Amino acid sequence: MDEQELADRVLVRLVQACRDDPGMRFLVTPSIDRSGGYRVSYPGGRFNARPEIIQDLMERRLIQVVEEKSGSLVIGLTIRGFDFYSRNYEADSPE
Image 1 (cartoon, rainbow, N blue to C red):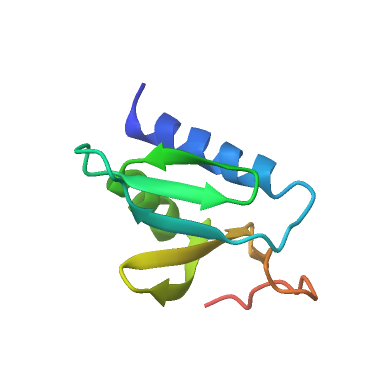
Image 2: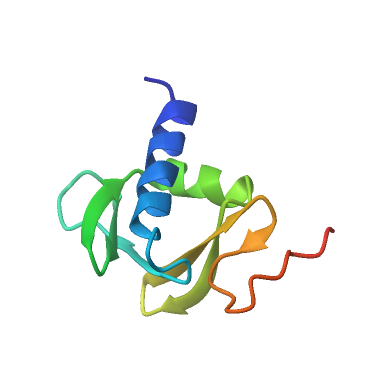
């Protein structure tokens, strides 16, 4: 499985987690194991992801950092120009 497929699988997990709460945010922390990856946590569960996968999703503007907290990131979904954690669901303005 290539990196693009892995990134898409992580994105699907994030979208599925937000099914009932489009404004959900995710906490991304360094993993406690020696893999060098991240643990992505949310109210319904958690999973691990490699740093390059998280970076790829940010570069493709599918997720963005909402807040930085003592070594951790709070991220939210942005898909097809929509800000899923904005309560009014307005489209992002093009750059």
